[in-house]
Image 1: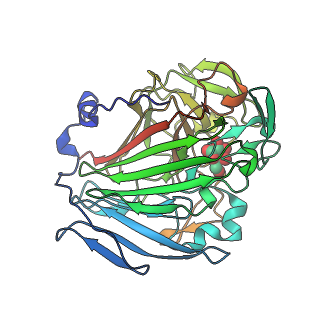
Image 2: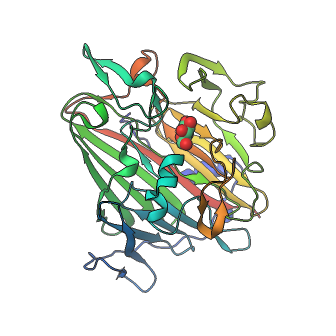
Length: 399
Ligand code: GLA
């Protein structure tokens, strides 16, 4: 969980036959100064680089929400709100240099706080915690004591409970000298049933190399399960693809965790080879999706070389736009979710109705239900330890 060994992703891209030339050109980073206003403001450091902060509406109890924009000089732009640490937009050029928004979400804060959104529960772009994915029957035993968590997914606990980290307001701080935003949230002892006061810091960094890097750091005063992730839904067609089924996906995993009907792992790690789960070779998401039980992919893949070092999790290519994304992580797993529960009831940016399979998620994580699975890598954080995981999303094009 804590060991980080960052290799330069461009080396990896080269290994995959993608050259640096296919990424957008790079430029220098700049520094920025502290902001002073709560309305739209821009902190300039040089003529080109800035972090913009603007109002993003209010929560139902009247808390002001903000939206921050990170940019680099290649035309990439990432918007993040302090509500749920949600990434609301990632703008990145296509093969013709035309920018497009490659994640699902809303232009206004109200989109994320509306009753319709909460009922539907897609977790667009959100920081998910304390525990990404499911804990069976909302129960686990730690140091001889049984804990009962909020149940918000049938009889199971999902994505941190009724009010997980995706629905709280985070404190924000700009990181000097980088296009980076640090978000902090202190989760109280007993929140959603979890033990210990947990302090979490998540830093989003947009690099000059078109990487969105997410660092997750946490400490606790009592032993607790923790499994943090980001729940962005991607569609690299940026509004030009009817759904995400034509995206060509590779997942660096020989095995996946088999689940029961309520999507709780049985404990078995099953080889993907020769099955509809196999994405070891580049394969369009839609090729075999009709054969997958449960309406599509919603599975945790066991990443190869999942020893805590930074490694390739997945690559995705969208042929029409030429956009390409690579996901690297220190985590041992990735949840590939093909947007099976989207049903067209939510309309997002650009008036697009988000129907089934319109977007897909690659949630880097530890395995679901690990607190009840002794053979899975541990997700228990103890007092005195520091949780630190990193995931990096690199964007580029193939011409
Ligand atoms: C994860 C889960 C899915 C679903 C989505 C959110 O990917 O595995 O079953 O809950 O989050 O809708």
